[in-house]
Image (cartoon, rainbow over all chains, first blue to last red; front, side, top):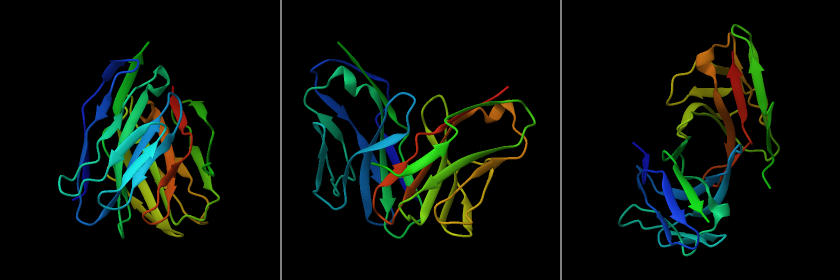
Length: 112
Length: 111
């Protein structure tokens, strides 16, 4: 079946630290990969995406590269800010499938 | 900007009441989803639809029901609310392999 595994949280960092949140997937087809962010009291917002191998998605200083050989899509940011505190979800959509699949979410807290 | 809307944003209701959570999208997406999000953050798919008059149960068993009479509308109904239904409910839509768009969610409290 299709599944997504994210790095366990919570993750707490100081401002300007380097961030990595790991995400790996298993898929029966060729997925598109996503990172979503959820701020307190809100729904999920798309942060970035990649639709084919070696694509790099980027937005707001965050980056993730579609690694087909390792079935991974790790989220990185070089210098985090307090405003990046949120819950981050890795997700996949399989072409032709009916469902999108998410990881369990990683809560990130950035301290000043 | 996402064109998917959920109402109400917050709802406090007594045990035994019937409730309907509304979800509407204006993007013409065929696929729509309902997720239940527990306090530990994890998203549990409870219902999905890939078009008008088609609905399927998701990965998490739920006492709620859904309908899809129009492409843009995907309401979720609880016939008799219980405290165990207290949660955040998120609606989403997507078009094939494109990104999913989420509503802001409905936070339901059953007292």
